Length: 64
Image 1 (cartoon, rainbow, N blue to C red):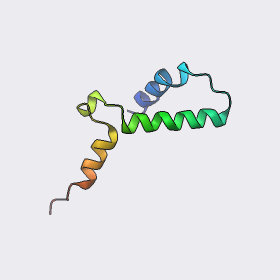
Image 2: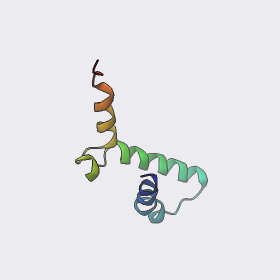
Image 3: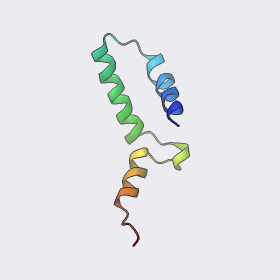
Image 4: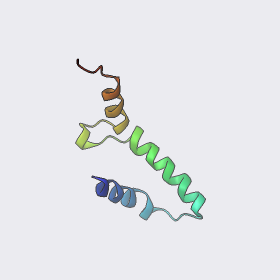
């Protein structure tokens, strides 16, 4: 699963940009991960974002 994430990051962000500095890379990658987790729907999550799936599970009360 983590290999898929890094492949996506490389193809959707890193290979398309030319970062001016390490600081620039950190800033732009941080923005990309925010997009990836909060706004980008994932087909494996039924078109939900990772944040939506995570917070739905956290908010559900545990069964006794």
